[in-house]
Image 1 (tube, rainbow, N blue to C red):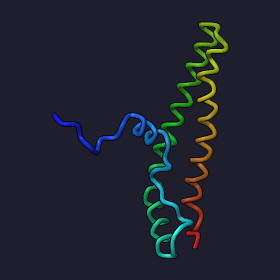
Image 2 (cartoon, helix red, strand yellow; image 1 turned 90 degrees about the vertical axis):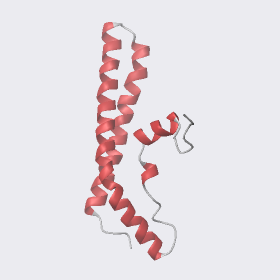
Image 3 (cartoon, rainbow, N blue to C red; image 1 turned 60 degrees about the vertical axis):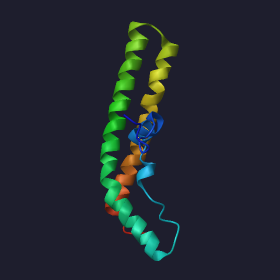
Image 4 (cartoon, rainbow, N blue to C red; image 1 turned 120 degrees about the horizontal axis):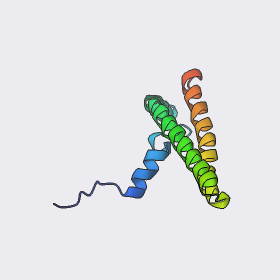
Length: 111
């Protein structure tokens, strides 16, 4: 079986699984028609933000639970930071995603 040229590497798949920037187009470049098309494309893809929100919520809870487990059961406070940091970062990412969802639902087109 020959390898597929369109197959994505694991790093790319992991990036696309956790981060949503690749889904959207830049609305600040091009003429009015291109910006309008990019905005419509972004509105069309914005329903995926809820999926990314769920992923980051689960990642945050799991990493926090692992941090608590390592800290309390193994008494390894320094190692538990390896799990607490992604948990805290997930709060920031979820805030950004929430603002984006609200912006796409509430704000009019920028032009």
